[in-house]
Image (cartoon, rainbow, N blue to C red):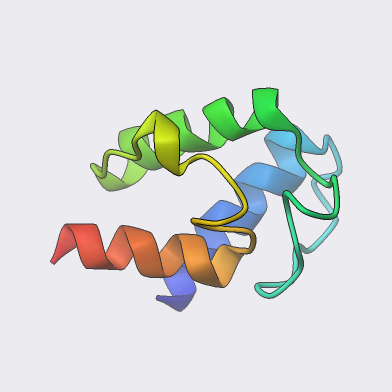
Length: 81
C-alpha cells in the first residue's frame, strides 16, 4: 500500500498543489482541511482510474469516503483485489 500512497502523494503535490517538493502525509486531511477542492477531486479520481485501473464513483468523491491518502489507498487496494 505504501507504493500507492507514494504515487498519490506525488500526484497531489505536483499536479494539484503545484508544489512538487512538498510531501503529503498519509494521514493529512485532504478535503476537510481544504487542501484540495471539489474540482481537484475529479483530477484525483481520473488519476486513480488511469494509474490503478480502479473506478471511483462520483458519489464517493467526498470526505466521508476518503479524506487522506491512507483511506484512498485502502479503497484502491480493496477494489484491485
